[in-house]
Amino acid sequence: MVSGWVRNAVAEAFGAFVIVFSTVVVTNLGWTPRALIYGFGVAGLVAALGHVSGAHFNPAVTVAMFLGGHISGLGAAIYCVAQVAGGVLGGFTVLWTTNEAVVDNGTPVIADEPVNVSVGGAIAIEAIATMVVVLIVFGSIVDRRAPVSVYPFAIGLAITAGVMVSGPLAGGALNPVRGFGAAVAGGEWSGWPAWLIGPMAGGLAAWALYEFVISDRNPPAKRRGMVFSEPMPPPPGPSLLP
Image (cartoon, rainbow, N blue to C red):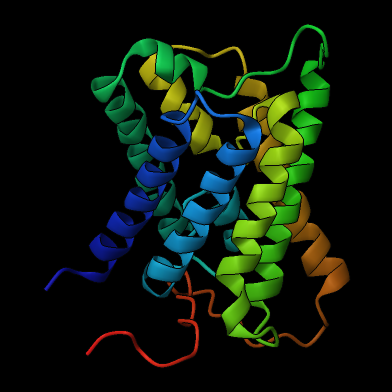
């Protein structure tokens, strides 16, 4: 029997691996199909692994969950390490199966000519897009009043929209691991302020907005002593398994 922390870490690493691999390898496609692949992929991962680890796959989500009291410091550290490891493996898997040009083209970068987005502008764009995603995570998962059937679709749709908006301007990472895994494998680091600072700032903003403005003042008791994230309930309905 695999221990709980190993199971959760593997789930987080696998999710990050799939995200980086699937979004880097499709660099020959336009932003709309790339956004759909990212969003649908995350929706499927959340539905499949949400009840195992909470399906963060993103340090911005994990840090926000830590601040909200839904995962301990140790659990958050383990999750982030697992996510980074999975993302780097995903980037190198693309490199091993294709070539460095594919990885470089799939690494999030800040738009230059003719748009010429500034570094600060790119950070803000990534922060806003990620804030929406993390806010939806809080509203559809953390808040137990939300119907459990909507969270994979809601998160996937938010990511799809976020990539469509932010991709052409700031790279559309919405996740530090998405940029880091590709950058380590391919060596393209020019967009790091957008894909690192932007999503982390967006996650913090989403936590603050939800915690102090949107949520009610009598939320369900938080289990601050738990090591790992609260698992998501599976979507309702009959099982497809015999």
